[in-house]
Structures are given as C-alpha cells and as structure tokens.
Amino acid sequence: MTDTEQAAAPREDAAARTGPGLRRIRGIRGIREGLLWTGGLLLLALSVAVAVTIGPARISVADVWSAVASHLGAGESRLSPIRDGIIWNLRMPRTLLAAVCGAGLAVCGTVMQSLLRNPLADPFVLGVSSGASTGAVVVVVLGVGGGAVSLSAGAFIGALCSFALVMLLSHTLGGSTDRVVLSGVAAMQLFSALTSFVVMTAADAEQTRGVLFWLLGSLGGVGWSDVWICSAVLGVTLLVCLGHARTLDAFAFGQDAAATLGVHVGRTRIVLLCATALLTAALVSSAGAIGFVGLVLPHAARALTGSGHRRLLPVTALAGAVFLVWVDTLARTVLDPQEVPVGVVTALIGVPAFVLVLHRTRRTP
Amino acid sequence: MTRAVPGGLRADRVSREAGGRLILDGVSLAPPPGGTIGLIGPNGSGKSTLLRILAGVLAPDAGLVTLDDDPLTAVGRRTVARRVAVVDQHAVTQVELSVVDVVRLGRIPHRRAWSAPTAADERAVREALERTGLAERRDQSWHTLSGGERQRVQIARALAQQPRELLLDEPTNHLDIQHQLELLSLVTSLPLTAVVALHDLNLAAMFCDRIVVMNGGRVVAGGTPAEVITEELIADVYRVRAVVTPDGPRGRPSVRFRPGRP
Image (cartoon, rainbow over all chains, first blue to last red; front, side, top):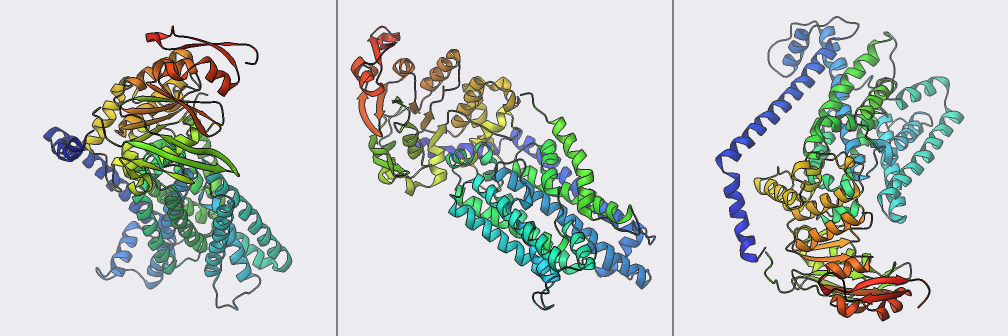
C-alpha cells in the first residue's frame, strides 16, 4: 500500500462502515448482544433475589424486594426488624459477595489461562491463596498484630507477600510464562508448608477448625464492607481486563506471535498479573480460597461463546456469579443447620461438570 | 501495491550474543521491495535469529534495524505489526479456534482497545481467506487441520495484517512435498517483500529471486540462485559433496547430493 493509499484507507473504511446494509447487520448484532447481556443480568438479579429467600427463616421474594427498596430509600419497610435484619444484614451481603467472588474468580481464571497459555492455570496459580492462608493463620493462631489486624487484613498481606515473591522469583529466573507458573508452584508449596507448620504446632482444636473452614472457602459472617471492597476491586480489574481483551486474543499462539501482532508482551503481562493478583487477594481475604470456580468456569464459558475475550470475559463473569450464588445457597442449606464449606461444594459439583465440558469439547488427535 | 518503496525493512550490521556466543555477527540485509529473498545456511547459522531481529521480537546487541529508514525501536510495536508479518515454522495453540478466528488475529494491530471489528477488518479477513483458498473452510476447527493447511491459515492471518514485508522461518519444515511447493508458490505470488528461511536448496533455487547464505552468524554469499548455489559453496558451507546443474525450472540450478566428504 502506498502512502496515498494509506491516507485514503480510513475514509474508505468510514464509507464502508456507514453503508446501509452493513449498518443494519451491525444493528441487529448489537440488539442480539444487548438482549444477551440484559438476559444474563436479569438471570443474575433473579438468582440473587431467590437465593436470599432460601433458608431457615421463611421469606418471600416480595419481602426481599420490600427490604431492599426501603434500604435504598424508596418506601417504608413493612417487615419486622428481625426479618429485615436477616435479609439486609445476613443473607443479602452474603449472596452478593458470592456473586462478586464467582465473577472475580472466573475472570481471573480466564485471564491466567490465556496469558500463561496453560489450561490448568487458575487464580491461585501465583500462590496468592497459599500466601493468604499463611497470613490468616499467623494472625489467628499466633496472634501477630495483637488483635489490631483482622483475619482478612492478615490474609491480604500474606497474599501480597506471596505474589511479590513469585514475581521476584520468576523475574530472576528469566520471566517467561513457564517460569511464572513454576515460581507460583514453588511459592504455593512453601506457604502451604508454613501454614501446616503453624497450625500443627500452635493451634488448639477450635482454632484449627476455624482455620480449616476458612481455608476451604466460606462466605459465612461476611458484611457489607466486604461486599463494597470486593465489588470495587472487581470493577476496576474487569475494566482493565476488558481493555486488554484484544491483546489477550493475541496470546493464542504464544508470546512471540503476540509480539509480532503488535503487543507489548512484558508490559501486558505485568499489568494483567498485578490486576488479577490484587482481585484474587481481595476475594480470598474475604471468603477464603474457594477452589475450582476459576479453573472450570472459564472452560465452560469458552464452550458457550468461543475464545474471543471481548465476549468471553463478561460471559465468564456472569456465569461465575450465577454459579457461586447457587452453590453457596446449596452449601448453607443442604445439611442445615450445619454449613458445608463452599469450596467443598464447588469441587463436588465442579468436577463432574468439568469432565462433561472436556468430553463435549474433546478433539480427535 | 507492489510499487517500489524506498527503504523498506533493513538490517544494518546487526549482532546478537546468546550465552556468551556470537550467534549473529554484523549481518546486513536489504531485501529489494516486492522480491522473495531466501535465507539458507546450516543449523545454527543465525537465520532464525536474524528473522526474529527483523521482526522486532528480539533486540540486536549491536547494529540497527530500520523500517523506511526509521529505527525499528522508534516506530512502535503496533505500527511495525501493520507493516511486517511473521509466519513461524510450527504454530501451536491450546485454544479452540476456527480458521476465521485465527485469520482475525491478524487484525489485532489494526484495532483499538474496546473497539469491535469494523467492516474494513472483516473485508481484510475475507480477502485473506480468498487469496489463500480457505474461504470454504472458514469455520473449520484449527485442530482438525493438517500441517499444510495450518501453515496456509497462518499465511492468511499474516495477509490480514496487510503487511508490505512477510518474514517466514522455515515455513515448509513439517510439510510433504506437494504442500511445500504449494506454500512457496503462494508466497512468491503475493505482492509482498518476502524473506524466507529455507533448508531445501532446490526449493530455495526454484522460488527465490535472491539468496543470502549464512554460516556461523555471518553472511558468506549473496546473489541470484545461479550465482550463489554452486558446488564449491555447498562444499564450503554444508561440508557435503553435491553436483549442481543448470537444469532446474526456468534454468535455475538443481542440486544433487553425493555421499562422502568433499
């Protein structure tokens, strides 16, 4: 293409874009995508509303609606303070945090799998969850911080330490993607060993039970502050990842191929690893290490939408949110009054679902 | 599209070290616009390193790569990717992609963040598919394609980038003879400057306008196939005996190897 041709190209493109036929096709496609998103968000809202009604205290969707409306300043609540409290202070933050965790873990998993080109990568591949566990255990069992540092804060600090260690290790080892994964595995082993050591030597039975429950993932006892913090981090991370959607597509054939498609490989990797690690750290500090969502949901979503990240990322987020809302509802009701750690339920449901997805997308060698 | 562009993609005395060994030692390359340049030489002679440096994936330790007389490092990655496309010897992915998905990757340097593909993107993809004879297979899965078909899809992806320079690193390595000939015919028919690293001397002689011979990180010979591919050079560079006769297609040299040391 000569220089004059290149100068003419944008005008020609603009003319083609505004052609009536193409505009109509794009319009129809836009409406269809719009319907898909509206449908997905409605499904999520409905899931949250229905999940809040399920539990020992009998509550209807109308009650939920009334409580939410009154707290948002639209009308008086007709509910008793106890029922209002159950909805607004117990079940609502818990269900919303389940949605945020599901969405966040699924998005982090998708980004890790694409960026590290490893279908086994999940949000915890950088050792974030093991670091968080060590941080939590050090605070709860050893009493570091003298009560001024909460379990969540300890977990968050532990997660960041572990992530920093992984970044430092992988950088000194050459910085390629396989080095990142191997450094993550090493950090995971190290911090798991530290956690086990502290629990074995210093914890009493009650502490051990509490720590174990948290390690397996638990959304019990979360409050609105958890929801706000995690939602804010999720929002920012989702925006960063969507801004890199095109770039993530470029990694399909590896780093060099991405570089020849105009991607700044090093910069992209640092930005995305830091964003997803921060989100994972925030989620793990609030809800513990809920496994399997970040590993399986991206594969399921890919089977639905294909591998283009511009559509894949929002679909994965929605699917993860709806999935974890229902899994958490199951976890707190199935053995009522006892609660099952949500991580156990995600694995029990996730493994068969994973096998099914892999079976459906299997390829002939 | 084939009008001569002054400058183009050039390497000027580039060197690169790896593990304390000089793998590229002051190599210069100035492909004439629109032509097909063959890079030949034994394993480890620096062909792949030179191509990676030309593509801007690897930075030279010394020397300069220029695009239309501007240093490659000053041009910006995305701009380079809109001018220079690369096809490797063996593209591997775990991702579930269709043929058209792979070709669409070539539009990434032309798209902005947040933007949906434009009509111009779709047109470039369609043209690339038609040019490579893949229009009917656009929805076939990448993982069900043969090696030759995969390389053709990679060339279609490169064409979707709408480059003026195409760099190919042993693109025929994993292909049978029919597909080797098909692929190189396709590459030479394109209105682009192509730099192709090749192992097969007969293929290089048959398809390239000019041939550059590398050995031990240096350029040891350069010229038309007839000037470069000689019994002496093959003995010197590859350490094998060969008989070269001018009876290849269009009078190009044809190489037959003989057992034993030269």
